Image (tube, rainbow, N blue to C red; front, side, top):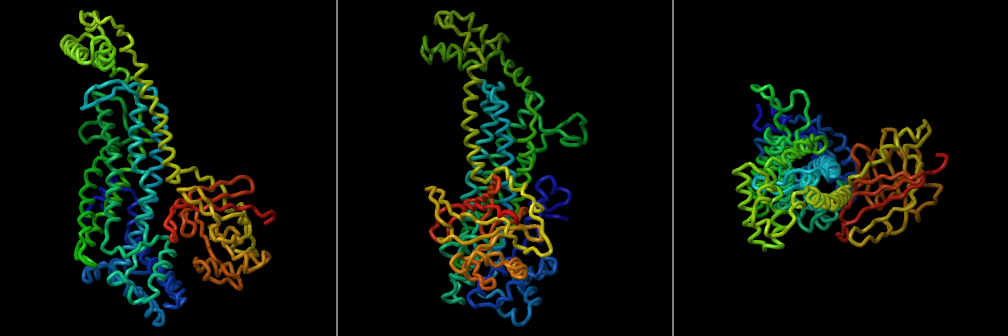
Length: 613
């Protein structure tokens, strides 16, 4: 039995996605908690506060090595899952390592930072769907920019426009919410490490350095003070998710009406069994829109819990922090199902242009009442013209004649001496609507680019392009770094990422991933750059990436990047754009905020292929 439809085998597939459920699964949570503890150990080991072997020992523990069900039973006694988790991990460590495990941290640090890691992955899933939805709606708006249809207000025919304009309204509403995602990501993806009351007192003067190294290891930002009881970022995340469901629900609301039997202007994509009825064989219910509207209705309750949790008492509240665990993952689950269905609509909505045109004539020309009143107003004055057309519209409803026929019989309209023929021409109204499509498309394209939504042509750079031999180093000198710059978003200014340009080499490792190392130019000569196989294995196995502190043989590595095509991460930066132009490879990261000056920027790495390697 399940208490939430999102976790139910029966209801879950309707309301959420497998990918999002996996993102917040127990195994994923435990994996993130282990990653958090390992990052803490690595940060502390660099300062001599923990043994060097502690981090690798924690990394060697897999989520499946722990009895998650038993941890849950013990969490019911302890009040939080962190306590039995810490005890279970300690039991797997040697006595020499166990005493340094979890040093300086508290329960909330582990849970909050693990949650941030789960949120980071969840936002990646959302970004992919948002990109597809914006792209799909952009194509729909472009394709139907001149397709005439009825504009409606209060559910009634108002004036003609184009279906492309209507799709552009959906597009901009969703894109505007998406546009806030990069900034939200910056505020959300921050580490939590404060110890019992937020001051890291047990770490003394090293507390801040441990925090910065801890955050660096996880690819997260830091905040000026511990955010144990400053829960605004969680509430902000929830509010953004609800806004997103609202933007999707706007489209779903319109689709439900447009797909109704009496209107029949659009239909959701059909597949056997979709939208059927147990009693009525002819039904094709708008299932996708239904799921979106259900998500929006349910989401609002969850976000109220997050706002309630902002009233956290002192340095740790009773109950309010726990309440977030019920709300935020559920919001992500609901949003994932809504996005899945919205993507289906954006990419496959069936548009009946003929029915749209027929519905324009349904009200016998009343759609053109505004245009007719406008033309008459030039002669009669606005108020008089309005009353005249208003009375004519009533005659249309009473007699069934067209508005053009009623006005043609009206003595007052004839006395105005105005040619009303053009008022009943669809072309100007459709053209006026179509003119707004291009600005909407440009707006959406700019937002897609900010989201990092580009065709990632890097996927064509296949691993087998650089064949490995038995004697090859795991880090092959296949690409040599030409430049590594940081570009400030606000000013466009660029500067060397490390001040002095390091030597860097990029290649493929046997596990199928791509790696890069950078070595201080002023410490070694170029002929010493490419590591031996043994050194390469040591580097890749350690996953150490901290400026100026890791020694590879006699060479000081100041940065280490791990590029995974599946995960898309380079060190602390997320890879967004890959461009291959002959023998030049350019990698651009997503925007991120500098730990030094707080400014938003992105890294741009340019590599040249090394001939013959």
